[in-house]
Length: 316
Image (cartoon, rainbow, N blue to C red):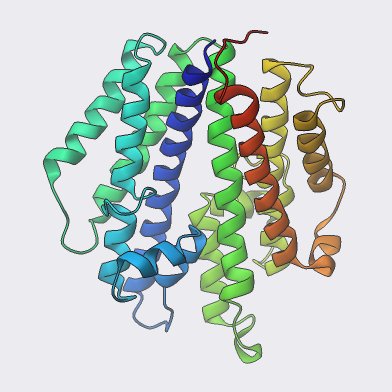
């Protein structure tokens, strides 16, 4: 497989995953904003959750909800906006159409043209629009699941999807713990409880958390579920297990402890497998998540160096 094909598959799935996450973020924040009885600022934390505060301050003049929504949904100056990600995903797919199934290309192309014909939004898109975007992403995954061969290309798709998912799950938890931590008198109160429910809903894990824990929602319980649960598909641990498995399927030698990439991913996976939430909180949840994000960035950089920025093809 050519490095450019692997890179296109990786980024196509990573951008689709980013679109789905953004639609979740916006949907939950919109619901919180409608609850006028609770004094919560639901929009600014989204910029921090996406790690785009510096870029936002460069291209926008204020932190109003309208500017934040525009930045996340349709700004051409934001390469991580929903429109930009869909454009990039479609362009990645166009360059490698011969590799994809016809159904995958047709669905992604239809998503692109539908969004293009809708034009620009004035304010927040409707809840129906956000749900449709998320479901379009999920339908794309479903089409790929039944139509795309489990060959080398599929493994790079999974790498892009899981690297992005682990990053966003950790970021949204970090924003709540580090940036939104309420004052002492509000801990455990209505505002605090609503925010923790919003964190779970943003990760699509509210019902699964209730089923697995069957206890009241606590910061410790939510953090353990989103970081360390080995069954929930959006938890950090589940994503890291998937990244390691994809690397094993691509090249067992690169995934071994004798190679830089394999050693790095193995250590990162072990760090989040052989620990518990008490140790993480004692060390510092923000510091742990910050280290995870650095590790994920390093993983991405090593993938680029080994597989994407190569002039020759590679194989199993």
